[in-house]
Amino acid sequence: MLEYLTPSDGRAAPADEHANDLFHHQTRLVTDDIEAVLKTLQEKHYQLISSGIAVLPKAETGFHFAVIVRDPDGHPMELAKK
Image (cartoon, rainbow, N blue to C red):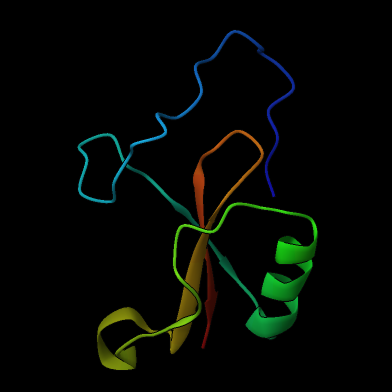
């Protein structure tokens, strides 16, 4: 996950941000074991944006499963699995 230590004068992402907001951006991290990564993040109390692991249409995205969580600064991070 990302944590910006410097510069330290940036603003946190708005709590009411949505995926269709103009400034929305998410970083995709690809993993072979999305279930284990998600379990670890939940144990460390990361905030989930998704309600759980979503099944995606592979033909459109290139991935079968994904979940979105917030990094320590509140930015969306998508975890994806082929």
